[in-house]
Length: 326
Image (cartoon, rainbow, N blue to C red; front, side, top):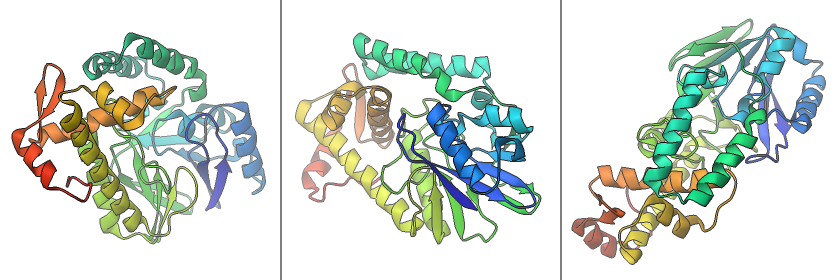
């Protein structure tokens, strides 16, 4: 398996595509549909004597454009089969009803989060202008958790890893010791939950479960969707859990200091002014934490948004480690 690094200055940057070139030629993720990324992917494939037309199968970790954008173009050039989790497959296929549902959910949540009209317009303009980044739709074969994707001389076991998106999936290599994690586990950033895919029910809870699953498997190495390989995936998963416990502590501290607030207000205290896609990700992450804490009984929903329960106020005052157990 060969890692092909794609600069991608559009989103998080430093995307990875992974190539298996043997009896079958399989590509895991494709990069965003912009000319610079296309040229980088073509060059990376050419280093292994592969062209778009040679690809037999494309396996996708999730539906985001920086992982799927060139898929339709490659499929048109090669006739490759395209494989994605059943939850994300309709979006990759360009299903109009599925995308309409996403837009309707955005509108509902923007109201619930308390997003101001000007910021909403900026975000919707950014999302609209970014549609071409997704490239052309593909004909997608869906898979589910626990499936084995078998190609000539190459197999991947599907390990569903929801949170960042509903259908995000990791792929365990044949040795069982290494895993392709997409955006479920990243070496530098923590994947956004809550805003990155508004379809996910209880996104923080689902993501914490994903991290627990990865940690428990004890993989020797993870190959992420961005940046360099992770040599101790279990430790990185636990580190991200700790990060979310710190973030929950900060969310509670904001409410303790400023009183009841909505997700937009909490986001402003956590992240400051935001632009582009982060106008979605900031309040989305705040919302994921607020809802998780409300379900745990630490917060109450009020007209202004959320407020701490009396018990949470007492327990927060007793904590000195800057973390809130989740």
